[in-house]
Amino acid sequence: MRNYLDVLKKIEETGAKAWLVGDTVRMIEMGIQPETITLAIDSDDMYAVSQAIGAGTVDARGPFPALRGELLGVPFRAFSLRGETIEEDLSHRDLSIEAIAIRSDGGMVDPFGGRFDIRNSVLRLTGDNVELIEADPLRILRMLRFAAEFEMDIFWKTDADVRKFLDAHADRMNGIPQERWGREIMKGLTRRPYKFIAMCDDYGLLPFFLKDFEDMKKAPDGKGGNTFDHVMNLLGVIEARLDTNKIIQNDAFVLAGLLGYVGVKNAEISNRDKTSDRAISDYMTGWNITAETIDNVTAILDNYKHFYAPVSEETFCRHVLNYSRDAILVALQFAKCVAIAEGTLDEYRDVLENNTWNLRQVLRRFNTVELQTEGSTRYLTGREIMSLLHMKPGKRVGELLEGLDLAVGVGKVGSRAAAEKWLKAQSA
Image (tube, rainbow, N blue to C red; front, side):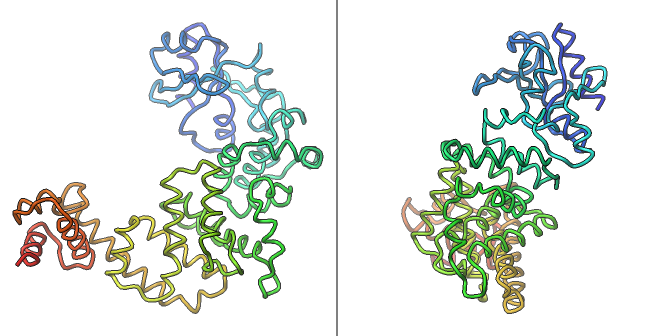
């Protein structure tokens, strides 16, 4: 923690007091290394602080201007103190575990017992103050995210206050913009998607941001359960996989599990149609999910079901070229998760393993191109093809590029020389 304290001391050389606060202190107390530290500074002029320390730029967007930068090799974000004292600043923070500060001498400021709550894995509203939720009801979702991610219990009074608030203020919850829901939802899904959604369901929050899920609870699956049960089964499998595997496209992987059953006509996720696809897209658009992630979710849901039958290397090449390498690899992982959730893994185990082998061979060959060409995805560009074959721009150049990509993917071409030879054979 010495580097962090040195940052505080460097800022205090300007005459302003500074403290480590919020997520930084909570992470330190939990034994987690913060990548970026959060500071509170008793100055209303962040521009003056930036000039005095010779680091950072002021981001004036949002309700609280922030000074962001790097000092002594430590990335930081600093906010002006809210109130006259650090204790007053801490009182505005939603949870006691975030209402702790560290002074530049290493001393702790913990007026609400946040360290005690961390040690006892308890979440409570700062000062048991329900007005914190009344000021911003989305803090409820943040609390549940922490409870799921860190496997913490919610203090009995906080639990009672939150449930009472939700019973009395459905209009406030309905008034929260979907974009704000989306930011907290994505954070909640990152590590513990099953636990997070289960807790949201327990508190009756799903109708506010996943209206279709209430209908799913009423849709029998013919097996003694309902479609909602299938969503939760799949999220449970995905959560276990997140614990044991690094998923390249984590957000898309989890979103496909959460939303894949939306609008299906029975409890088999593969029975999606244009109506369900549109509903899925509407959720993600409303949550302000990036276009790239939406495309990857689409790629996963469009492709995974094909992997329950043998897929040739050439077909995998086409999938990879139409979408992306990572999206298809994640779609294959998703197919296995769906099979586990639906109880059909034994039926599809061999074909999934064979398809995994075939896809990895294709990806290995495409990766070889990048290694041999210092990052290029092709041995030859369209311009080079036109030069070699004395061609003019046109559809034929695109066809040759696609054919060359397929030849690389299936192992017929493994070098630039082989690519040139393949091209000449096509033009003969």
